[in-house]
Structures are given as structure tokens and as C-alpha cells.
Length: 190
Image (cartoon, rainbow, N blue to C red; front, side):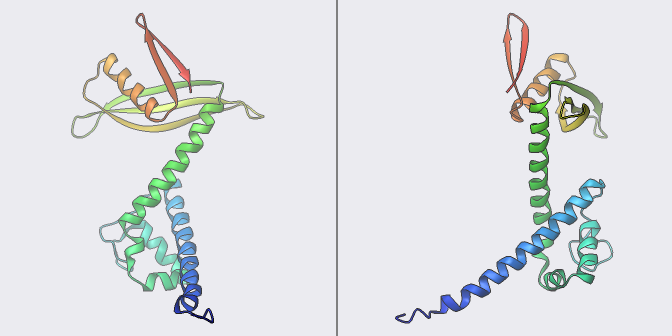
């Protein structure tokens, strides 16, 4: 203790190296998840084990990367706890939140926006309301963009019920504020 040479001092560089290695692995896993999402490919298969036939696109990409990347080779030799569905869900949530933040930024900078909705029953005969926001961006050149904001489950298909669903979704996104006075609805960008 007097010389400042403790066990912790010797172990700290090892801990920092391990943290850095897993940060690099996480960066690669994020790139894989993003690549699959951009191509609208499912992540999971029927099993959550590396080097199995039906383990899904995410695991197949990890296996492919491990063939030429020494960091991923070492990562695939350890238990696949870091590659399973919990990690995939967490990556998907993080990417989704980042995407929604970017979309919200576009929407708030736009001069014109419209909301497009459509109801369609799914296989279980539940009405699914799709919500799309179309914006006009005036950054240099004018761009018209449409952003799918998700599905809402509609218990009723009346106009009032659908309007309430849309209102709740937009409020949840912290995008719009609504006021109702004398049977007129006023919508304002927040």
C-alpha cells in the first residue's frame, strides 16, 4: 500500500482492455443490426446459437464477420450471451430511438406536414391503423419525405376513435399539441 502497487493497479489495465474490446464488438454488432434493418431483413432464426443452420440473419452476419475479424473471432469463442435476443432487442431499441429522434428533427424543421392514416384488419381481424407523416423540408433543395410512425390497434373504426388514437400517438411523440374549443380542433407544432 505504501508504494502504490496494489492488486487493483495491476488489474485495471486488463479491465480497461476488456472494456475496449467489448466496445469494439458492440460497434460491430450495431453495424450488423443496422445493415439488416436497412434491408428489411429479420434478425432472428429458430435458434440462438452460433454456427447452427437455422440461427437467423444476425448470427449468420456475426459468423461471417468472425471469419476475417480477430476481435469478432475472440467474441464468438465466448458464450453467446452478448449476441442473443436480449442484445438484439436492445440494439433495435437504441437504433429505433435514434431514428425517431432524427425524424422528429425533420418534422420540427418542416414548413408543411400532413398525417396519412389507413386502417386494415390483420389476420386476427384486429384493425391496424398505420400512421405516416409527410413533411416538406426546405433545406437548400425542397424535399418531400414520408415517415412511417408505426401501427396502432383500433378497437373501433369510428372517426372519433381514430382521431383519439392519432392524437395520443402524436402526443406520445411530443410532436403536436391539441386543443379543442367549441367543437373545433386546433393543432400546433410543439
